[in-house]
Image (cartoon, rainbow, N blue to C red; front, top):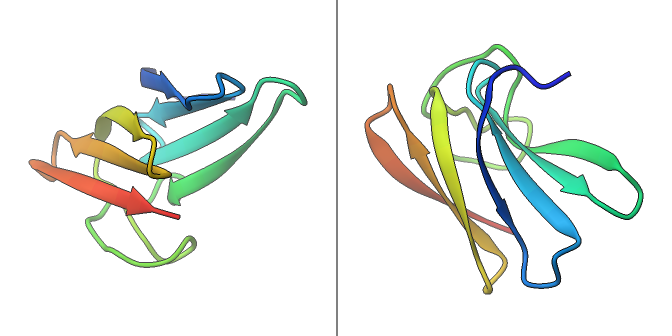
Length: 88
């Protein structure tokens, strides 16, 4: 289950959504064809502001997400008071 989803964007193909889970401190990617979703940034219920690969990075109450065609996301954080970029 999603915990307080509050921001969403899609990739240029339109098959993937990127969903902000405010209370879980995560960003999820949802494949609309398979209906499968997975965490691509942050860790459930672990707030923080740490850069790094998946499994080590932390988000602090993310609010919104914007997809860039260069396969990256801009993420705004409320409590972190920052704009962060996720590359993959």
